[in-house]
Structure formats: C-alpha cells, structure tokens
Length: 217
Image (cartoon, rainbow, N blue to C red):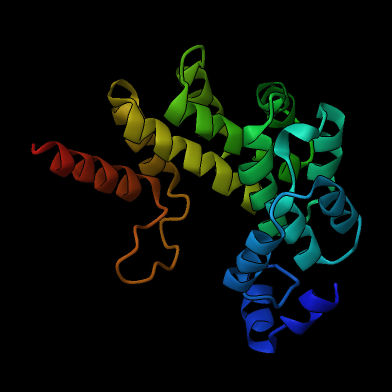
C-alpha cells in the first residue's frame, strides 16, 4: 500500500477522475509492479478487500482467476463500481473463469445496469470467439428495444455487442447497421484522430473494411 501511495500522481488522478476512476496511479507503473510481484492469490485477496482502487486493480493483475468460485465473482462484480476496476475484473478474471458462461447468463438479465453490463461484455466475447448456441437475432431484438434508453455503461456494452455482431456475422450485418442508424447511439461521441468512432455503423464499416484489406480483397 505504501508503494502504491508513492506512485500516486495528481495529474493522472485528474485524468482518471474525468472517466469516473478514483485513483492516480499510472497504469504502466502499476503493471510493472504486478510483473515484479507475479501471481500471489493471497495478496490479491487482501488487496481486493481494501477500499483503494489502485490496490483493487493490482489485485486483479496478480490474482489467479480460476481460484474464485461463482459466488465470489458475483460479489466482486457488485462491488466493482469504478469503470476501470469493473472492466479489468470482467476482462482479466471473469473471462478466464470456468464460471464465465453461467455468470454471463445470470448477469445479462440483472436489474443492476452495471452488473448487466458485465453480462453483455461476456456476451460480446462469445459473439466474437464462440458464437455457437447464441441467439444472435434474439440479441439484436433486445438491443433494438432497450439500448437507446439504457444507462451509460449498459448502453456502451450493448452497443459493443451490436457492433461485434455486425463485424463478425455478415448474415446479420444489414440489420445491425440498420439498428445503429435508427437509434443513433454514440453517434456524436468525441473520437480522437486516428481512432474509430464507437457509433456502431461507423465501427462496423471500418472494421469490415480492415478485414477486407487483410484478406487482400
């Protein structure tokens, strides 16, 4: 904890707080610390139990994802209220867990929009890597009805799923583009030069174009 405190940078905190994250540790330095510590599950659990966001992030980097049971992961995602902790928990821990599919199904329908966003993030992962058994038309039905008025983090996760369906599954691309164009979610989102807009029609079109370039089409 003392070492994490020494890494605190007021400028980094100011930037992070604009994104809803209450820590001031440079993430590259945090990753370097995790690399030095290597995997330490007991330490990770102690760090997670603190109220310190940087400590929680470090915990997620040095933990053993498969060591957590289903209920532990469910409790953790409900306590992960800052965006970066939530994002790392889902991507670095839950996605590697044998309980990921069970939690995906439970979380997607959860009344807590932050928990539901975790379920949609896991669904997006399946859309891209293991779509067998997913009802893609059904997912598009839900997105079409619910995404426009969803809270920000849930809306972002549903939009990512919409884009991924359009990118990875040509048979659903026209409908995904149509939903994005009609709902206009994130259409005016500020995007840095050189970055792809999160607006689904733009995102889908650009990623499909890149796939064509790589394929020599």
